[in-house]
Image 1 (cartoon, rainbow, N blue to C red):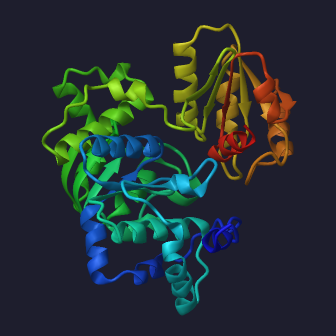
Image 2: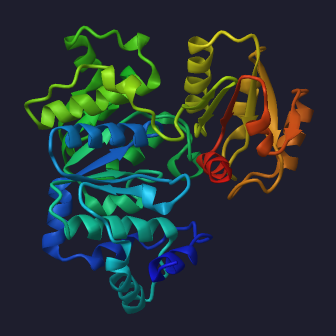
Amino acid sequence: MSKFEKYLESKINQVKNKNLIHLDNIFTHTELSRLRNNSISVVGTNGKTSTAMFLKIFMDRNNISSLLFTSPHLVSYKERIESSEEIDFDDFYEQIKFFETKNNLELGYFETLFLISCLTFLNSTNEYFICEAGIGGKLDTTSILQAKTVVLTNIGLDHVELLGDTHESILREKIHISNSIENLFNGVLNTELNELINQYTHIDNIYYLSQYCQLNDIDIEKLAFNEKNYLLALMTFKTMFEEFTDPILDLASEVNIPGRFEIIQNSPLKIVDGAHNLDGVKESVEKLLSDYEFPKYDVFVGFKVGKSYQEILEYLSSIDSLNIKLIEENSFFLQESFEILSNYLKQNNIKFQKVNLDYFSDNKNPSILLGSLYLIGEYKKRN
């Protein structure tokens, strides 16, 4: 294990990132200017990772160099930073340590990897930095980029304790990932929210996915969730760069985003999906029921602490073809208590079965594992 890996491992339980006002001090004015001008911030409730990955693929296929930062990872921290050039994570270890000591800070895990990604980009010849936001918004660690280019995937109810409990409040937070946006690529389909977006004065130009689909004779209502993400990335790329040759929607079905409705096995069917809020779970379940015609499915679920599990479990229980399998205690990082979840299910007369995570691998029925990317990551580590 390298010095950097030991250092990073010491931060695994440091999930709080509270150093926002200090983070930009690690960069020079020139470096901050490059980050602002050459970054593409991807923000939203769902679909950030797949949209960012599609955008990176488009650039790769057209020989436009870029560095991609996403989160969280499933198995290795190295998944979070993908570059057109080789990456040595030890290169900036001493600089990060010195920055902490000089400013009397203790960086969080996410802050550390984000700063490493920024320094890697600044010390490379990559042309663009595609950066997926964390929770997203004006208090997000990645907001120090103050990117001129922002991609907004959608707005849903998640992280309500931090962002607010209405779509409008969550939009207000996420749209301020940058205080001066030159180009906003907007995947939001809700008419009322789009009217609010039009009112924000810190945005110069807005490009709407709904209008893009209309101009290209695409029925957006018939698109799967990942196809919408693909088209949002495509619209962004084609607006930024004039020539693009990949056929529409071909890549969406061709690329399997790890941990996002990822088909692990066809017989018996096994799918893993990191959907962790109601909108994401609905998208995944609807796709499952649309793409396959089995009479019954086993849904293996576990949630991260603090998630709104009630509405997800209520939704799953409303579908007759789904059998709920609740993952036992201490199966993955930051897991919500099995007792809390099981008590909720019992109190609401919802049938479930207690299982361990390994049972998902051995199960002979069509099944899907969902509820947390940490859960998906743990499954992948074991398999």
